[in-house]
Length: 119
Length: 110
Image 1 (cartoon, rainbow over the protein chains, first blue to last red):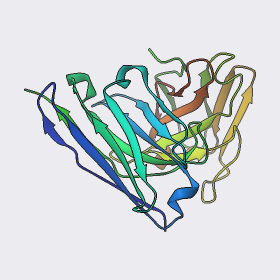
Image 2 (image 1 turned 120 degrees about the horizontal axis):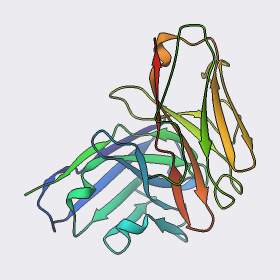
Image 3 (image 1 turned 180 degrees about the vertical axis):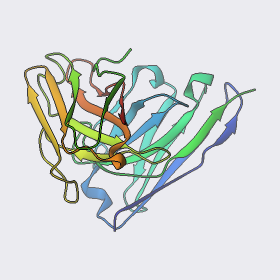
């Protein structure tokens, strides 16, 4: 069974940092693109970033470029999102999602981890 | 305001057929596949339709997708109370080099 488990969320002050992790199991992690998608309270889904299997391609939402870094460790079957210079508008549930390619084609999702940016 | 435009809400009675539209442009829907996600209250999103009109195993054939030019649509026939959820279209944008979601459509079963 495919499982994606996010961790690392929490409450952080504006300007602070957090590192999210996503532990994968039940499939060959190194065969898939991986992505982060977020959902602000009461709002819709927003794609954040994605990363190719071999780390050769990565893409970011404009509003997080230069502040967030997506990475992965295929040996550890883990996906990460380093978030720096956090803003109130980054407050959201962050989902890890498995992708079949670079597009928004996600066949498995984690349960999400809450990130709250507040003073 | 989302690049992919969906109606904020649709409603129908049990047994009815409803459709949800998703309007984009040449650089996203016009050039790439469209996928649809269902998000039940309090749950993570779930893939409902992929590559414009394909259903993952386990998704009832009451759900169908289509795409024409720069628009796509999701149809739900034989509406059931458990279909009450938020529905999102999604596509890649070749010009912006970003993933896009529609703003979401809340389906209410009356």
